Amino acid sequence: MNKQTKILLILLVIIGSAYYLVSKKPWRTSEKAADAFSVQDTAAISKIFMANKRGEKVLLERLPNNDWVVNGKVPADFPKINLLLSTLKQMQIQMPIPASMHNTAIAILASRGIKTEIYAGENLVKTIYVGSETPDKTGTFMLLEGEDDVYSVHIPGFVGYLTPRFFITEIKWRNKLVFNYQAPEIAKLQITYFQNQAESFSYEKEVFNQAFSIKNAQGNLVQADTQQVKVLLHSFQEKYVEGYYDDSTFTPTERDSLFQRNAYCQIKLETTLGKSQNLTFYEKPIGDRTKERYDEQGNELPVDPEKFYVKIDEIPQIASIQEYVFRNILTKMSRLQKR
Image (tube, rainbow, N blue to C red; front, side):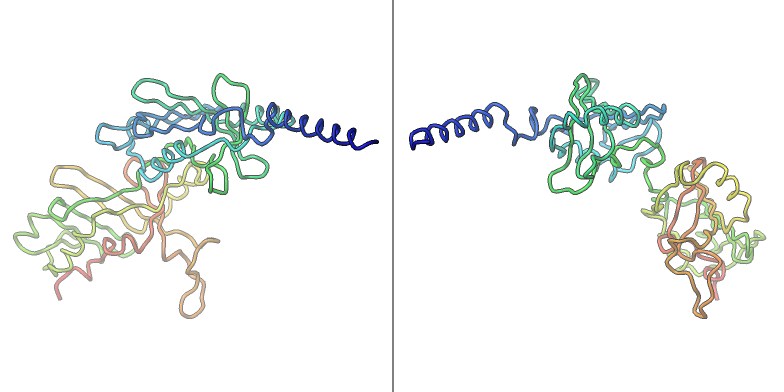
């Protein structure tokens, strides 16, 4: 092979390679723009509706004051709303799903996909089907409604998949705020300790202001340590539960079993505007995640000293409350009475 023939072959290879790169563009992540799945103007989003094949669904709606509600009735947990909105804004196409994986991805979306409708006002902006993680767990299977191609979608710089941010269970979206009252707003407060009635007490604003007294378990007036009562009343601001257990982690049967136990205590609060709240506390057994398991003598504790199960008003699910968050509220008669 002479020199000219070699040069010609090399040129043909270069031209062929250049044509392939220009026409096929194998380096591209997608034929679509990288932000095809994202919503840049998240401030304009008015509601987000999500549903799956099992008939589960949830509606998140923005109120005029920029608060959010779940299913038109439950205050939403803003950190979770904010995480979902930032996800919708930041997520980008990582790569198209290879043809060899297309049918598998479609099957995943059809069986376990979460249909997510995003609205601005009453206008449907985008409908996304959110699937599970990709095999390498760095992306999430997603499909735009009306299209055939499935893509791996991710957030640049974030390692992991996005499905956990698109959940449907109402209780998981619920605001964790339980108490948020200034001391003057509290008209009545009763805390009953079922295992030690001598530590139970009740506070009535009018009685306390007139006689600096609270009532014991028998309803008798007892002179109060005014400073300790003030500490108690000022402890009802921005008190949150740790979280709620949904039906998959704390079943209705398990809840019924819990309610049959003897409760640790109950808090009944009534505001000056007539709003009332009831919380019933149950001791939590020692579990695998209990941090403080033994007493000073090395004996295993019978219950978790750091957490309680709590039933809140009409909410059917059980909440978890950290003892140190509610420590000043869970005070006792022996601390409040004047010495």
